[in-house]
Image 1 (cartoon, helix red, strand yellow):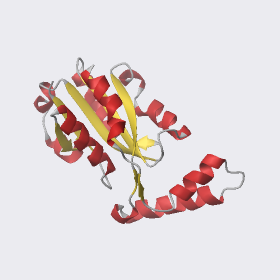
Image 2 (cartoon, one colour):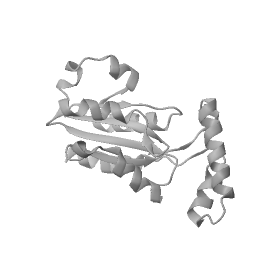
Image 3 (cartoon, one colour):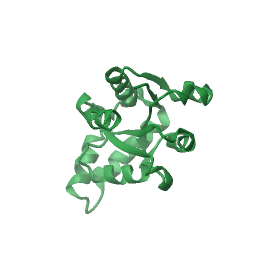
Image 4 (cartoon, one colour):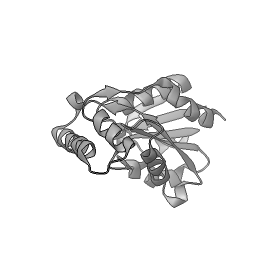
Length: 176
């Protein structure tokens, strides 16, 4: 099975998952910028196409690229890999996955979530400032739930909760 993994990564977590998937599938993984320069013929022979993007504000960064391209990929296994800072059991993950695929795409593709982390040292300044402010807001929020307080504490510093085990459901879907 020929697979192509396209990814957008700001701090390296999504790239790591894309490379793990490519390694397990014997696939090609390419940054989104490269994929955007390729013509449609590049994807013609692929049996499976995965787009991996990081989550920001509840949305998958550059997910619209995948959604726009997907109609031309009918008959292929399609998947979207969402990488975020939240643990896999966070309530926000379900919302992100529900919103990841637009209505018409839900029948053609599956969305998966993989926990990544925060790497403040590799973030661009605007993202770093936004995340620090969000973490402070979560920690100091009146009437915050235990999950919100915990998330605020977690987001206050860099951490890595990525694990290769999170690609197993994606592999099962693509190889099934």
